[in-house]
Length: 261
Image 1: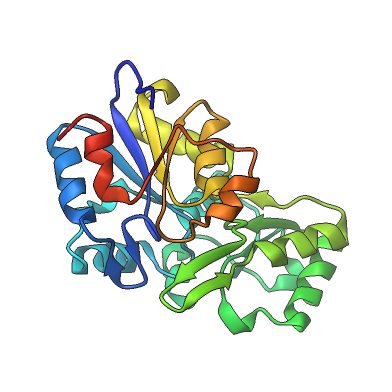
Image 2: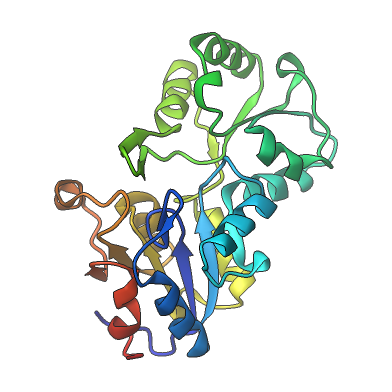
């Protein structure tokens, strides 16, 4: 791997890279401590849309991962920032109850009156009837804000379909593109770079998703390191036109890759 001339910071995916479900990836805690000790600034970029900022931070601490709350950049937080910048607009939040607590300052209306429809992971509540209702609102002038557009994610029982398929279905049916807020959105990575105070040439993205993590980062000139954990599937990587700067077995190998061991 060709390293940046002056590596200053890391953007690190969470689920699938540092942990899977409730279990940290072996050696991830020690590796993260080593990277931070070396003076690398970190932002933890996640598309997770089922936990509030407080709950997500608590989950990381409970797993022993040394992550500060201000270091977490979530897709719902990007949605919140987007809505805050558009005062006077109405929105309907199709989000998990815990995540909705982060939006207490955002005016909300019923779906039929919403300027913006925010769609995140709401599990079995995302029914055919609800999709039809969202479709009709979009056809009548509403704008879809997708928290992310992930295809799938890894659980301890295997892969599960994510909300990206439903977002794509709404885009196909309406003929209108959703505003995607999380990875691989360029705006999401710009927020991360701004928070880090670094240029794209000074940052490395570490993730398990060849599309959302590595592809999204590369569009802004950020080098991507892919881990063989989480949702990583060799066949999927082989079929992709995206080529990571490096592939490592797991996050525990990152310090050695960067010459820090």
